[in-house]
Image (cartoon, rainbow, N blue to C red; front, top):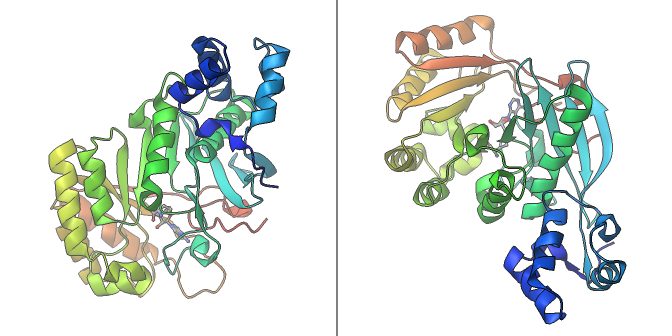
Length: 346
Ligand code: SAH
């Protein structure tokens, strides 16, 4: 049920301070409540134990706290956890905790569904779409941080915006959520431990560079040949590789931070020598590294993981050209939590 009362977390700290002053209270009360809302991630006004009962009741009458709710949690035998997250208006997104020996990574969603139409991605089939608010993104991170402490005895160490949605099509809210995640008033995490992954929206990549953001950028490339990329990621027709290249050069000139290209190799789609040569050429434009991701099949079988031989070809050719390449094994496949499998199925 959507409440008509205002979501208190849409107020800035200053607005909250002003609100209390208007109520005849001290501005400092705003700071206290703000801390409860963000740093302490309170779900209810009654949790705010250092605030008087009267004030808590007054807040209750004026505002709601639209906290996300974990509707279902699935745990994979490799330790991966997938959360189905219910939003205040009844819609659902998914977020994933991915543990390795040394880190815990949160993979968070930025939109309900996705506005893009990548042929190989389950999320693109979800029609319904809205942007997540900054607090809905932040809450996913808080929940995973709590799960990391509970199940793996350590706090969350990394965040990747690789869940549902295209983060650069919800740029303002993603940026606000990252401000909160990195602020001492929120989780105080380093922006160096955050990766925003995009299918490549040139205008927004340039905007990020102008904004001097401090987090890292990954681009889902999958092909460095326009006609191939357009066949698997149709929006490429509107954002061709030449524009992407120019935006990435701009990004590097302004930030001096290298880019990660995510790349899946599919049988008979991008497994030929011509595809490899095009990638090598593209990698020379801007300092970068390549993450080869294992393909996670999504039902209909139109796309198949390329042979090991094709993968080897990619790896040796990239290495011969002194391009750093990593092969990323999938995690959480048994619970549909791996890249491209997030589709609110469970
Ligand atoms: N929209 C953003 C972030 C979400 S997708 C982006 O495109 O980067 C996160 C990553 O998973 C992307 O690199 C995407 O290309 C990849 N991916 C999507 N479907 C996949 C699948 N079925 N198997 C493996 N990786 C997939």
